[in-house]
Length: 235
Image (tube, rainbow, N blue to C red):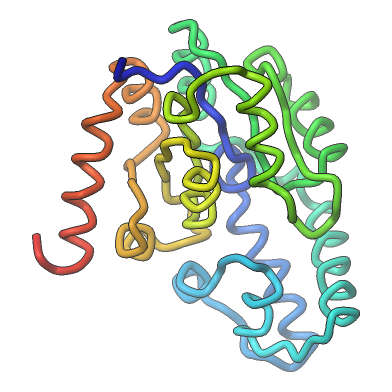
């Protein structure tokens, strides 16, 4: 069987267009600390996980307590403005198409569980998802374990699950779960960076729905290999 029986969606960046807001918030903190601000391009080349390492790359000198204060400040500013963010282009169509195929869907996010449920419900999206799974700490830790628990609850072959994300972290999460992945660039990480890092990159959310409809897991692997060759300059 080459088809997918379940699609897991990352939230921030993947379904929600929030890279621009994350950039504005981190630049406000950089200014306050007397550090150089980021352009959208530079941001897409440096943002990543773990988040404390990303912050140190930006020049923040942090011990654990300092990182937690910075993280709290970022989160407070982000939450004040999160309603300004909209779903990405094609998100509703992709969710609708995949639901129409009878393929189950869920959200798997490093976003706080309570807040994730709130934003998904407020946008009237719960009808598309069998589960909305976030984490139970404010620092985005535990996504892999939560994903494994979700797949176990589904009782399906992990390789029949497609995790859709927008960063190399999502690729790593999928690999740790034994699932397939597809990445749709959002502005959080540059497309060339995703390809060079071994990500299976699709141009948009419409192509995610196409992939789910045609069930081409083998084609996904083949296309990813071709993209990796191009990213390495060998294609």
